[in-house]
Image (cartoon, rainbow over all chains, first blue to last red):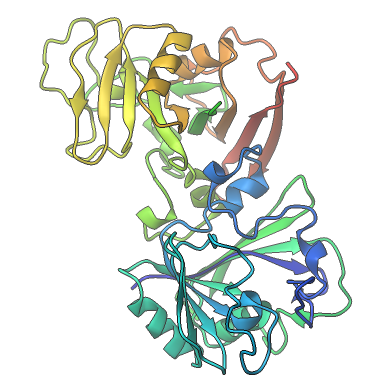
Length: 214
Length: 214
């Protein structure tokens, strides 16, 4: 069976992974400063930038390796809510979204798929985490599935026991408000082996691997 | 200009990166225990294995990203010395060497190139580091060049000031004898920014990035 992976997921000291309200000017809902120290959101590899290969860069550069499809919440795809008033919206990323695989967008308001020339396509689905995972696996030739966020989407897959690997990043700031990564998840660490390491930028990287012992 | 990179290069506490004498049974010249804690020599990515994505695994998994060609010493290609008595030798790696790019093998005894179906080819060259680098760049479409070792090969490129990035790994063992990584290289750290981090296996990973200030 292929793995279900989370990568490069930044969380504040007080446990928030995004702001409450996504707008066109605030794609992380006002929590953009989660990425001020190092922006590892959509980097495919060390070959995609000319910057030094720091620890932050190295650890975020395995984001795309072996990934066959992503699953994301609707808030990551765009700021709209409810019915799709503007069907011309094709995501934040212009003509070449960085995913380069099929992407399942979880929404209660399905619409027709969208395809791009670089291998990225968006498929809109109203489904449980289990069903979304089965659907995403059907879109790939056997690659791993990445859960792309936001925090409530990752939290749902965690609560369902579906995550095999997570690369979480603690950012040494407080946001005070936002979407919590951990709400309702008591002892979510059980069943995982966890390594933590700090980097020169002040980030702490956490690698969670499911041990199968939960 | 593309970068010149060294990856996953293990060194003992006493500074050795390989044993003195390569044989068919000892491809690291008796220093095989450099890889007993974690064997990250020829892993292309986290997609190439089913093992947990530990810190060791994550950091060694960028080995192939953006690489257009490798340069290696003759001892990495095989145990032979002097003239090629056995032209049937095609390297240690069977029918699918893990490199998947052109590889320049430095030797005073050039022979005809060897090609494999998976993108790997070996090109035998008697040249200085500078000339080998120019030759390797001519074999790629602009990818980075990896210096694949052994230690004396990496040391020559370091001494010539040609290395842009190195991922070195200190292994907490002493070998007592072998090929030194550091012989004759006083203050080789000058001109590099260096991050070091430990992993649960006891390894210390060092990321050297050239700052251009040397």
